[in-house]
Length: 222
Image (cartoon, rainbow, N blue to C red):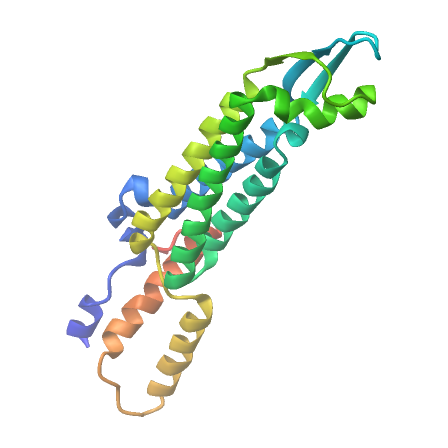
């Protein structure tokens, strides 16, 4: 019994084995932050347009990011959903969700670059809606929000890559598996012969219990 007890690692020491950069809280928190920043930027003015022409009087049109690059709003939400999915999924699910985050980040950056490359085309629909005239001459000036959103998109893609690399350090067992392990230990305590690998299974269950208690703000060493 003494030898078996020594093989069970202390769950309270498990977080120290994971590098700081690879911790789930670090990766997920950073990813959520940049996804929210990309989304929030679309609520701001991206393009200031001055429209002049014989058919309309001079008009000043402020084009929001959600109108200049509608894809950015959707892709930022996709990236956010992918991050949250990676945080709770299994090994394969994490990989798939992280790849989605990478693609969403690249999509956000590409959409922002397209707006910066041709702000007149990006503002065309908003100008036509505001003035009732399409294709008229207009002077456009970019704000700094498209560049900020492009940086956020690039960072989101990097966060997805980081999640792919760091996910191997994250726990892979679910609470359902932990509950099954507890039932197995309860059955073994009623006189049934121990199964091979029981000590290793108990160690994995204890690790999951420790993570769950840390999530609830409890001290797993108690």
